[in-house]
Image (cartoon, rainbow, N blue to C red; front, side, top):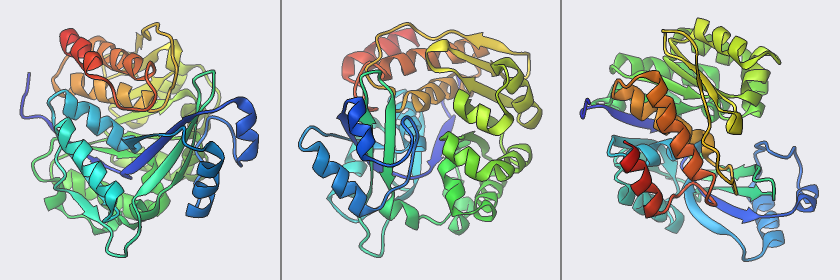
Length: 327
């Protein structure tokens, strides 16, 4: 084991507002079920008004979810992004510190912009439909980073949502992280992101990314509706390490020694929010500690299985105990 391995996440630190809804509720909001559509603060308040008091609050954000899990595993972690200088931002910092992560890289809005929030609507089939209002998170400028931001970290884990800032700025961020000695992992984030930025993603994967995570919808959007093994092979042409996540159908991964199928742990899912982020955390933990790829996948599958059995991304202590026993 290499205890000195460390990860800095780059993305949008936001508060997840999680609610259980029926299928009919989704007819009252715009966009597709299961996807992610940006909303403004007025729409956030409208949806919250429809939901009433049955909302659970927890720290979220794609890269951040992965960071929180890695911190629980004892990995040195930090998060680079922007929150509001408000109660929600203070809550976020407390939660990250409690998980074992560092807040030194978190920035605060200088414009009194509130911390970003994301409404996560969970239907009875455990599918999650996300409507984020990024607010202060949008003030983070990928073009403003320096090598000092990444100094001392082995890996920079990025979320695909950063592409909303522009390909040029994300290219600068990746180049800066590389110059500081970081490997780069990228989670494609959502099929909407891939549909909007497909050419840029293909260029960035080939030029900068060492590890790419794509779920089946994202892989379809990027590469076409092909068998997952074929999608994996195409991703592997672009990056040294590629993973195609298939949810309850498992995953395929290739770290350079050929494709390996990773079975999913069979559990009763109640909420798939952050399951892919948790799989990435488990896989990265194994990868950073130079474990065999099958073991990386086993840890990722175990962590994802724990995540889908609770509402939101925060796991109870007994779940972490089971995961530590696995390690």
